[in-house]
Length: 74
Image (cartoon, rainbow, N blue to C red):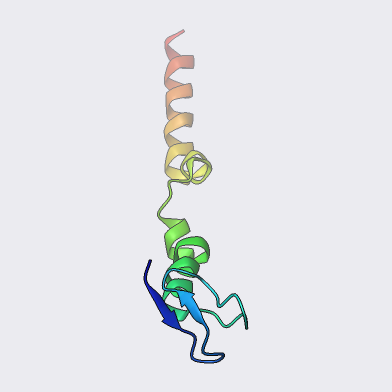
């Protein structure tokens, strides 16, 4: 297990630890990746939101046209 010294309190901490266990100072390299993966808006926008697709205007117009065509042919 790789360890490094905390710059603030000089205790050994794990390289992958998000914070120092002794003083609570964040490990900026681990914390930066963690924050980007959890709270970054661009990361969340990459997920497909089916409600936005379902309510979009283009989908709404296509559904109306399909309903009109079905009603006319009955």
